[in-house]
Image (cartoon, rainbow, N blue to C red; front, side, top):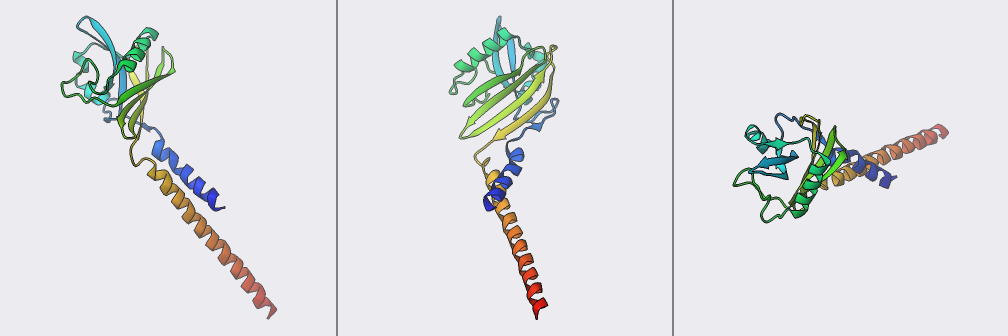
Length: 189
């Protein structure tokens, strides 16, 4: 029974350690990463943006969030060419951070595009964003998940809690058995 309690304890905390949390698209956290095609200087480039940084520049940039299949092909090529030493070839700000890498998946195609974008920081640290974009380019249903060096600690603590619950259950069971046996022996005297 102990292994069952340990596994159940770990499973109970998994949604809290690796699950997605809802984000406010109007005031996103720094975890939110979105894809956009940026039209500038006669050229269009696809890249990932930290959405909180993008919001202050959004009205001054020619960005398109409602991506076509051709845009997504352009994004795949841009992500494959991404260089972590340089970052994106076209930057939003001079001091923009170059992350270890990016990846994206199309969960549902247009017109109600659903994307998952991952931003890798290195050393098992990442930020994942899942969101929808309608045909008008409006971003909604934003959710994030993140991992870090201590991410695996919560399931370990859940396993430990499961072992403690098993120990308390075993003590309760043993105590009840002892009381019943004592009652039975007292009845014979």
